[in-house]
Image 1 (cartoon, helix red, strand yellow):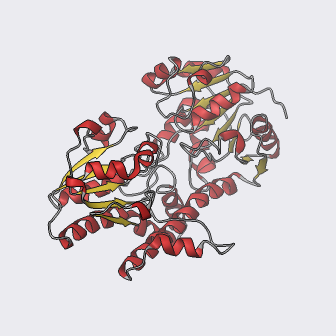
Image 2 (cartoon, helix red, strand yellow):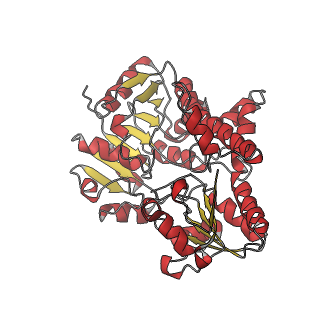
Image 3 (cartoon, rainbow, N blue to C red):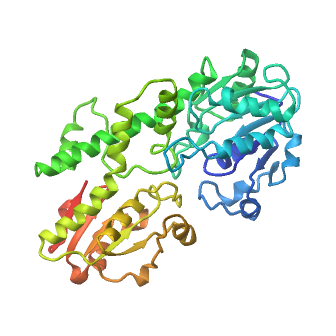
Amino acid sequence: MTHDRKIAVIGLGYVGLPVAVAFARSGVAVIGFDISAARIGELRRGHDRTLEVEAGELALPGLNFTSAPDDLAAADFFIVTVPTPIDDARRPDLGAVLAATRTVAATLKPGDIVVYESTVYPGCTEEDCLPVLEAISGLKGGRDFTVGYSPERINPGDKTHRFEKITKVVSGQDAKTLDIVAAVYESVVTAGIHRAPSIRVAEAAKVIENTQRDLNIAFMNELSAIFHELGIDTQHVLAAAGTKWNFLPFSPGLVGGHCIGVDPYYLTFRAERAGYHPEIIQSGRRINDRVGQRVARECVRRTLKNGSAARAVTVLGLTFKENVPDLRNSKVADIVAELRAFGIEVQVHDPLADGAEALHEFNIPLTAREDLRPADAVILAVPHEPYRREGWALMDGLLKNGSGLVMDIRACLDEAATPAGIELWRL
């Protein structure tokens, strides 16, 4: 399907940049806008710090990176892809999405369409964003311009499930808008389009996708706690149960990042505003938020049980998931904080994370590989590819005299090859 819309993508992070590149690859002109002049400068020089897009694609003809709001006037189809985190009270923080809305509103013209991809709660696009567009532009939504919603499904670091290869849910304020939004996305998404009957349905679909994963992982984390009390290896149990055709392949682990650990709070916030108190969702969040503390305390308990309290622990990996440099909402920081609370010296290494960002966000200095001192315990928190590649040789070299505790959070090390003198623990 073809279209004649002039596209602008607002926000060039993990979501927005792949979207902008996908449209540019199809041969249309795309304005890629970000408020960070530094980010724009990097992209113009062919560098993507998120590691999602190759340098060659950043130089595609028709792809114009800018931090000047006036440049948006050339577009008539705006795709908003800015972060929607939670605040310290775990309530939705709409600051970025409303700021992006004001930026678009200042250049809005009759006939324009604004589509939101940012994660929001059901009703946000029409109840929170639309009034801002109207107030600043002086135009009437549904008459002069329209809005739509198409939830992002970008999975950072995933080279298989790319933007074009994931079914795209689309919605629009009216039937005509829905047709246009569907046509625009269908021009680049090869996996197909799903037309949601309303914007609220599309918004709700987004938040439950990740809430479902959050609850399934919470179940695994609770099973892990139970089985450890019973002296049973959780991974052995999952391997056995996984032989049944309809057993879902989830595993215990740290749940951070900007989606799974955040989106459920958007749903619970809106549910409570409507007078309903969600119990299962909140319970799952509490379980997953305590995993980092549990890992740290287990580290202390096991080293004490072995005869001497850990004085130094090395933590490998700080980003929220493997093979990406994204530190947002990383739960590894919880492990570090809890170990520090016990008076343990913690050194953290991560080959992908930015040292200045780690220090700013978590007050955690990163230690260079060659500067890591032998430790009493090693926690393999994030299994980046370099760690997986070196495996037990790396663990052995980081422990004092090649012996001690290794905590393999994601169960990536070969259990059968555990060296003598090393105790292996995994969720």
